[in-house]
Length: 172
Image (cartoon, rainbow, N blue to C red; front, side):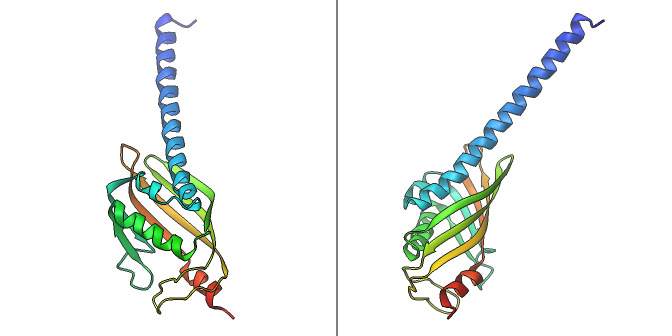
């Protein structure tokens, strides 16, 4: 019915297929774990640890990058990245990030998350600094990660709803 060579070819095909599939799943799981670790470190006030997860060539664009003068910013390199995280964390020292959805494809990941925190520090804004209000902020956001072959972050696009956050802080 089936020749020995057909069975051998089928067995070889299945071995290669499943090995490739499991290797890809392993990579996707590793990237998912790294993305989650960024947010765990942030929530645990250990943003310095996030510096260990990025490549020196990292580029971060927030809300479209520096070209978006309203609320965009661009940070380059590990030191600027960690400084940005520390600055934001000083504005909301008790802040937490709750991951909702993570999608991984190849070396890229997309995540939707909820940011919560009490406004306890000065928040820079396009209309001047907003002094601490003591109000709790709940903000929905998304991030898009790109990793190099070593598993280090090389590009991050962060999209936040700053208008909603400012409204929460300044409404009567």
